Amino acid sequence: MSIIKNHTAEILIVIFFIITYLFSVLEKLADWKGTVAYYTIHFSKTILQKIIPILLINIVVFEIATVFLLTLGLYYLVTQNDLLIAKVGLEISAITLLQFLVGQRIAKDYPGAMNITVYFMLNIIGIYLLT
Image (cartoon, rainbow, N blue to C red; front, side, top):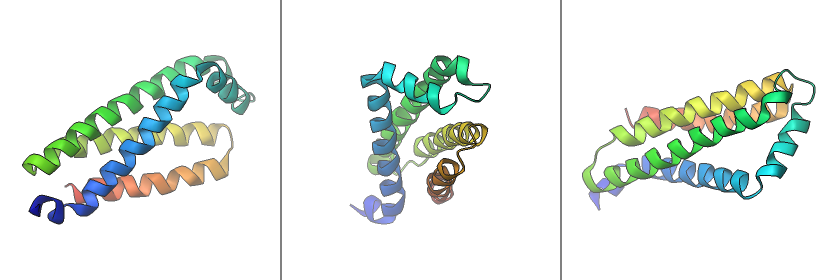
């Protein structure tokens, strides 16, 4: 129980991102055609329009890796007080968020880019706490 008391913020941040990415992956995979159609429209006036399926596969791979590492990291954090895997999971999460940010900036979706900033800030706080 002392591990949870000592790492409450870190555990909650890791759980937050597990939920966020897990739902994101499930939504994309449950309606793949709809997701591709949505992002094709979103990026219709950019150089990315023709490679949306490839980009989405890349994003899904990063999100799955993030969920896996954060889940494993949460286990090691709670059971063995080991911070490393959770930190690596949040580092992969930060790279994923940067990919989202680049996409939103290319699409000139400035409110969308601003929303990613909130996630990124929490992500960086999590990395800091796990360092």
